[in-house]
Amino acid sequence: MSDIIQLLPDNIANQIAAGEVIQRPASAVKELLENAVDAGADEIKLFVTDAGKAQIQVIDNGSGMSETDARMAFERHATSKIKKIEDLFSIKTMGFRGEALASIAAVSQVELKSKRKEDDAGIYIEIENSRVINQEPVAWEKGTSISMKNLFFNVPARRNFLKSNSSELRHIIDEFIRVSMAFPEIFFSFSSNGQEVFHLEKGSLKQRIVQILGNSYNSKLVSVQEKTDYMNISGFVGKPETAKKTRGDQYFFVNNRFIKSAYLNHAVNNAFSDLIPKDSFPMYALFIDLNPAEVDINVHPTKQEIKFEDEKIIYAFVQAAVKHALAQFSITPTLDFDLDPGIQKLDAVNKPFTEEEKTRSSNSSLFRSFTEKNQAHFIEKRSDLEHWKDLYESPSTSLKSNSSVLIEKPQTNIAETSDVFQILNSYILLQNDEGFVLINQQNAHERVLYERYIRAMSDKPIATQKSLFPASVELSVADAALLSELIPDLIALGFIIEPFGSNTFIIQGSPADVSQGSEKYILENILEQYKHFSSDIKHSRREKLLRSMALQQSVKTGTVLSKSEMQNLVKELFGCSIPSVSPNGKPVIMKFEKSELDKMFGR
Image 1: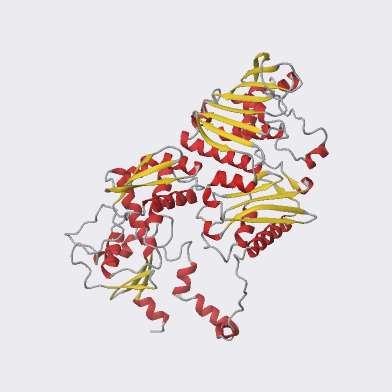
Image 2 (image 1 turned 135 degrees about the horizontal axis):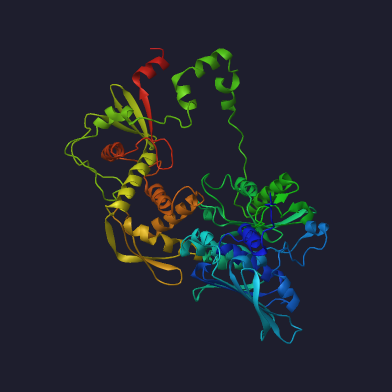
């Protein structure tokens, strides 16, 4: 039998390796921008066409390359940063493994122009499928231009996995922001399809943050600055009023390298714990500077996930630094309150929980309802709700298909014999001879709206009201790209939105339930909610938008409802296909049967 194991050809091996480094156009943008920074440039320009699928070009005024270096730069693991193994533990540059250009050349058609200051002429190189197809002298100024065209032209299966242009452009914007924010002393510009998206002049970190995130942050940033022998931390956090429902404006940098760290995010969130709602996230751009030997940046091909030598020290330091900054600006509370001494004397706190009491409690139906299965009070069979549903059904009634949040008056005289109460301005209690159910009003309304929006997407578009005075909304670059992607679906949901240039949009119409004057607020919150769901890869763009709309538009906890509003909300809930859970899986209904209640009270 002949031998069957063979070495892969270089071009195929390079394509396989490229899959780890270049996953989408944004990956190539990141690598090219970081190379330009490492070259010592103080001016870096990014140009993309068709969200990077057609072309990505980065031009810098850095040190440039010799003819030999230009050729060697495209070889795998060719690097000027590492000469011995110890060098891995003292890396301070952005790139160092020599994978980026080799990976880019394996999956695109590359043109490079580069010239050092001391050379008379520059070098021009064309590479396709990892092979040099042309090389010649060229007139060029000091610095380097790298242009990559037709990404994944030789790997069509991978190209087919790329998302829409607007989606890929948002990823490019994210990478551009991460690099440009880390180096405010460098001029950066970014043009897409011939239009300039960013023009970031050299300046301070605060100026760069405001340039990127918007003028609204200009007076809402708190400086963080702490130094120790072990590490330094600097940067800014947003005042509590800037907190959002999404993590979008959160940036951590270690030795000027953007990183993703849920652990450190938790440290900052803890520092804000008494200042913002639990479901909100603070804005921050924080830079940690420490000995490279204390951190391993070589644990992931993108170098965005790193490992600290001692995570607990970093966590404590970050949390303390942010708390100190907030206290200095008189934002955090200055008083600590002790637990009310009266509470300490209560039997529930004072006396031991005996085995007899433990057994009695664990055998109760109430205890079982909270501990059995994964979702408390999840109603698996709709048949359990049939006799409740009957109270809210009438042959002459039908659900409205418009976008009314709550219908003020019932369509017919239904459910007048049933008792409906609101509890704590959050729950609806509905009772009959068999017991009662508790309905969470927000979760219920989310379910009603979600199913209404599904119908709107299929065959019943939501009614639109034209605005007498159209509202304009100016967004950040990233949000503008996101909104452009969502506009077709938003139209079916009752919005009329038109681009107005320079990241500005005009809201010409909105769903019928949106009050005049609140269109801008509603739209901005929908975008924030959508970004909150954006990390969930299980759902499509449309599904995430529907959930965002339902959550944002639903009647909130704490809202007082009239009896007719409660009756109609319950009626519409029981008309839903899945009334027992919200679109996000939260329970809507808790059912209490009279027989179970009697047992609980020994009757």
